[in-house]
Every structure is written in structure tokens, then in C-alpha cells.
Length: 265
Ligand SMILES: Nc1ncnc2c1ncn2[C@@H]1O[C@H](COP(=O)(O)OP(=O)(O)O)[C@@H](O)[C@H]1O
Ligand SMILES: [Mg+2]
Image 1: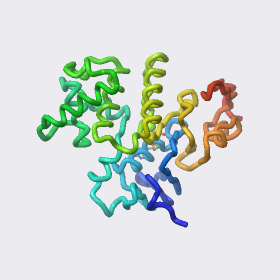
Image 2: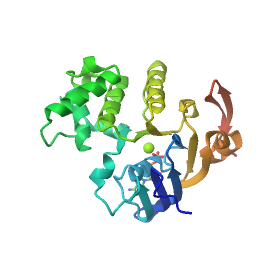
Image 3: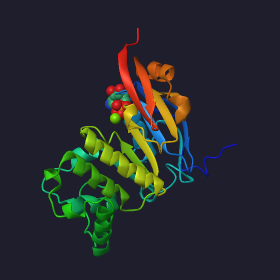
């Protein structure tokens, strides 16, 4: 039975080509209500391309994508985007110049980087509300580029949350954070997940997989190498095959840790 109409996101046989290169190959993936996903894969495995599709910024070269019951390509993407908040490094790098924190947050209303339209009073109020929820309201007048890396990430989460989206997509959000900042950030995500937000968390580190995560999609060279509950996918032999190196996987208090044991032969 095709349940794509009830799922949050559903991809069927999705392919992406860049020139002659096949970047994503035959991706079938459904995110159902109540599931919290991690997308795990080595550098270059296609994670960010997949996230561009799931957040409606890229149309696949083949296959179909349903988002919140609507088929991508048949509906206004702006309507779809209001259901989704995105945090990525690329986005972080795009905010240059003297733009202030509250303007960065309010640009989320337009799913844009720049503010091409005027920010209305209610938008600023909502922006401040979200900054307070993330405990960073005191930063609202600061220039974004002067913030620490960790503070910038939190501001981007605020930007992603202004619409109160159903789904939050985080593409390697902890890159460049020191361990305390990373843990603080991951705790915030856990709180958002307990508050009912759906999260897709992209990483290549098993250490960042929090207990709230229920499912893992494993990518290897643009193909699905594993797609199941967290416990099924996070096993040494499966990860070793997909990531291309041998690791010892440790588990404690619902968190995972990996010890590098050398490259695959
Ligand atoms: N224009 C392009 N032509 C061919 N290959 C590309 C192009 N852009 C990106 N790629 C390749 O696509 C693959 C997937 O990229 P990406 O989704 O960014 O990987 P990840 O996010 O998992 O690190 C990479 O191997 C990258 O080299
Ligand atoms: Mg990437």
C-alpha cells in the first residue's frame, strides 16, 4: 500500500544526476509521524543533496517526492517550505556583513538569506520569542558575524523555528563546535524533539546520535546502505561496510561512541 499521503515526507526511486554523475541512486525513504531520523554517511555520500530534496530546494532528476501529502512539483514550494526549517553550514556561511541577529532570525519568514521585504512588527516579536525559547534573546541586537560559532548555530535554529515548522532538518550542525557547545546544542535538539518537533539530523559521527533518535538512514556513495530502527542500523559490521573503515562501536546511556580501528582492506 502506498502510504505516502499520510507520511511527512516520502521519496520513491529518487535519482539525482549532475552531468553524467549519478549522485543519488534509487532512494526510497519515508518519514512517518513520530519518527526521528539520523542520516549517516561518509563525506561525499550524498547527504546534503538528499537534504536539498527533502527541504524542497532541489527537484530530483527522477522519482517522486511527497511532502506533507503534496507532490513536489505540483504545489507551491513556498507553502511546503513553511512546514520545514533548515540549518546548514552553507546557510551559516552565507550570512556575511553586518546583518543583525534578529534580522537573521526574521529572514526565516521568507526562507531567504537576505531580507528583501520589510520585517513587520509581529515578525520581530515572534523572532524575539523564539530567541528567548533558545535562551539567546540577549544576543538579538548583536551583529551575527561577531557571535561564536555555537551562538551562530543557535541563531540559525531560531531562524528555522519562526514558522513553527513540523520538521527541522539539520545538516551537520555540530561541525566546528567544541564538545561542551556540541552537547549544549544536542540537548536543545532533544528538548525540541520532546516538544513534538520532528527532526532529521545529518552527520558522519555516531557520537552525535542522541537517545531521542528512533531511525537511521545510512548512505554510501549515493545509495541506501541501511534504513531501519537505530538499533538495527547501528551495528559494527553494517557501519564498517558503509563508512569504509573499521570501528569499534560502544554504547552507553543511550549514546554511541566509535573507536577507529583502521581502513577496510
Ligand atoms: N556538480 C557536481 N558534479 C558532479 N559531482 C558533484 C557535483 N556537486 C557535488 N558532487 C558530488 O556529489 C557527492 C555528494 O555530495 P554531498 O551531498 O554534498 O555529500 P555529503 O553531504 O554527504 O558530504 C559528492 O561526492 C560530490 O563530490
Ligand atoms: Mg554535506
